[in-house]
Image (cartoon, rainbow, N blue to C red):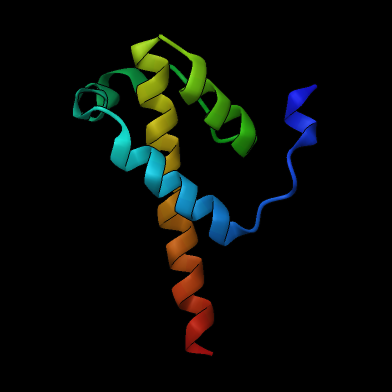
Length: 87
């Protein structure tokens, strides 16, 4: 499928893309996120699945959950990056 055809992304590229997704998403999703997230466990989702869902879904709660998961991964990434810089 189209998912497999994408070149592998570096963590840096992913983080950059996540930031862009999060900044361009409507604020209403952020406020609704808390209500909708508990329904979905997206921690097992592949990055491409999250991204494609954000690009194609009309389900506000699912979109909010995807953005929450992006936020979580971005925080994890930044923590990992700063930890590795210190060495």
